[in-house]
Amino acid sequence: MDDTERTVLRRQALRVGGATLFGIVGLPNGIGTGAAALKRTAQEDDGDTQEETLVASSGEVDIGVDESVETWLYEEQFPGPELRVGEGETLRISLENGLPEETTIHWHGVPVPNPMDGVPDVTQEPVSSDETFEYEYEASPAGTYVYHSHVGLQLDRGLYGPLIVEEESTHVEYDREYTLQLDDHLGKEPALDSIEAPPGGGDGMGPSGGPGGDGNRRGPSDGNGRDGGRGPDNGMGPGGDGMGPGRNDDGTGPGDGMGPGDGMGPGNGMVPSDGMGPGTQMMSQRPPYEGLLVNGRLPSDPPVFEVEEGERVRLRFINPSSATTYRVGVGGHSLTVTHADGRPVEPVEVDSFVMSMGERYDAILEADSPGEWIIAADPVVGDEDPAEARLQYADAAGDGAANRPQFAGDELEYGDLAALEPLELDGEPDRTFNFTLSGGMMSGADTDAWTIDGEVYPDADPLEISEGDHVRVRMVNRSPAIHPMHLHGHFFQVGDAVKDTVLVAPHGDQVTFDFRADNPGDWLFHCHNVYHLERGMARVFEYE
Image 1 (cartoon, rainbow, N blue to C red):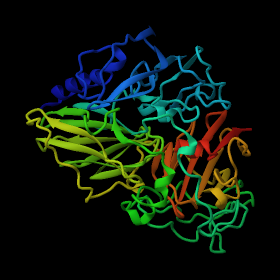
Image 2 (image 1 turned 135 degrees about the vertical axis):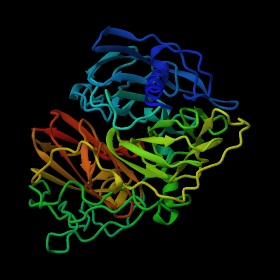
Image 3 (image 1 turned 60 degrees about the horizontal axis):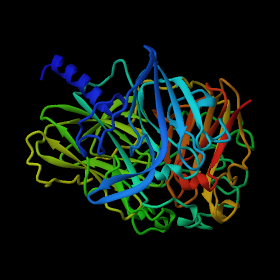
Image 4 (image 1 turned 120 degrees about the vertical axis):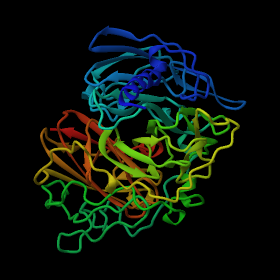
């Protein structure tokens, strides 16, 4: 295939990828999207503004062979329709709330203006039943994002969909693309009492204390202002080389010379002995899920992604799950990761990667192994069957026989990721925050709370920053649970990667990230496990 043919095919792929947005019909159920494409008409204001309406309502959808579920939907689709917009264009979305309770939409990963961020009682009043709210913002930068409700546990009802901001030019060539959304299927109304309260005690940490239990938010130290050691090699990578305490006792003074996010990231392969595999105490910390989905489909009737031998296929992986972290791989193929949380990175070839709630990875697959193969997403914690899709070559038999990935090769680490556009963060930080992530009695808070430094949102002190500040956030996880920590309104630098969500593994993992305070407002910082969020694991960065 020559370059001209490749360019034409890529443009065709982009149009197909936006099928649910632009009204293309005729895609069979299970092909590409994993759900029937409903006809919608794009409403365009002018060449620089794209207008859409998203109606939130309840309805019944098919998710597998002879399996349907009553859930909440955007535009009568599950997941919601894929929104595609060119980088720099204005996106105007009218949310019409046809649900029996209040709702909002959050544009996860996009640094929108603060009033457009969709956080109830922080950036907007929630939208009441039968009311409409209009979101408008510049779609920038390009990348793979996700939109979802930010009210209560509504995300676990299925209120989410992909948002793709298309780049004018890309640093990798490809012939076609597919979007894959991984989700956990509850099958009934979500409820906080469906999971156990955080476990009490453990890990030698005093109430409200920092990693060493000294109660003053200081980082781990060997007495000389140096880091007391790397976090355990627990499969998501150790955290903080050279991470000493801030200069002020409250942890908010200028830092001590640690560069942006040294030494963290998905590590050497998570195994059950890390406290995160099937059968661990954290099993009771997840709702009773009935299965795992790719694009709203159970493994009994998985979506099928068709390819031709010789093609380069861009796969956009999104994890909008409420409480599930996955290990992802493709049978018979390696993956070249090209973007992390929408931001371009130096391409890195791996056999698999771990993706927690709120994270996104784009990867190029070289279609060089004809047949039919399974794209698998195994739960890191949980005993559900893996979420599955099928990669099917044009000449494959289509008889259902397919091979799974073995997860025996190279697994992505955060340290493998090098941003092509790193943040401008030279010099010492202006503000440093040292946080302990914990829960239950170990946090000194209510026994059913998950906390950041012993404080429970919404009754937590604000984190004050000023426009232009270089801000450093250092975290240690003193709980037995995975915490994917997400910052609204900003990208941050963790190691050499630029992201908006980072996994902090259990049992002492340490992660540091830095960001520039360049988007004034009040911005939520929270665990993206919605059950942890609802039990208090959030704080708000407030611009002074």
